[in-house]
Length: 435
Image (cartoon, rainbow, N blue to C red; front, side, top):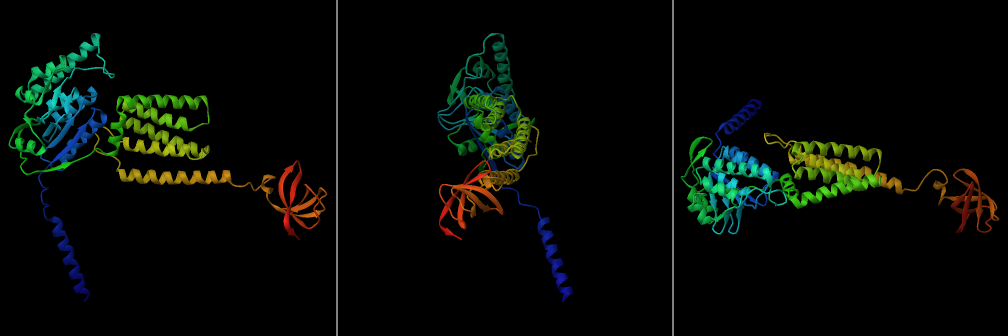
């Protein structure tokens, strides 16, 4: 019987290994789709870089970037263009839906795509470089930037076989054209009414994929849409110039209030976090450097909570700082590692629970009734041992005390301690109580 059980066990194990050894079915043909609706900033750069890597790893036939942008940061745009030009999978930039546009930075991103497409009723152009507030950069510096951006645009267009002269005019003269004109002037490849139409028209087209010819095979593929993760959404929000400015002002104001009124705590904690976020949004501090600073700030705030109880203000600020820092710590352009969000949430939730529990115990101890000294005797019940008229003696806490009452109280009656003056207790009779 035992031999039979062993034999059956070995059969099941062998069957299991044979199943594992069988080749997996190829993933269903699909393309990845991401939507960029807003300014071009570090969060968008990170999202596109992550999406290209994911499309390569999961075997996507192509990555579609649906684009609608008024422009954005030149530094982020250059990085995105570099990523698209060297992408290991075909990248299709689709300016959509109707009414959308690829302005300024969007021009370079569209030109860099393997397949550039626009929806009916869209436009592209106006890529002249401007300062952060939208004003023109004048003087020698403005001329240098314009020449650089014009050559940048020309290089992209020539590499993709598109209209280089128009690309230069889009920078130098801020020209803007509709989708029909863009198709006619060889700025884009396709005018498509929707994603399905884009895939249909792209089928069989040949593109240059990292120096090698590649034929697009997009028939009957499934479209899988991907969204920004939590970190990217937060950075995308704070990258708005208005939000960045408000964060900077809030950070400065918070630190000023803390330095001018030491001990308030909350303005200093909020100000420090806002200031670091402002430095990220202004691209003065790299993501991973900011993550390290936020983690160090969080540790400092938690240590401060341990030695200087603030009813949870320092602790909660430390937990928030640690959470933000954890999401940003391993963020680098060449990094392929990171902390799993589930681990971050678990660690932060555990730490937050611990901090809240400690803060509650501190709060309760602050509000609890004193147990030592005269304060600890308030409300206690004692026995009259020497008649109070109005002074006498009472027995409480195992000791005899001089006491004073508002009226006459006989020996043996119960009294309540209501106050003290010097070494004399103030007492009053308990109604209906006697020994």
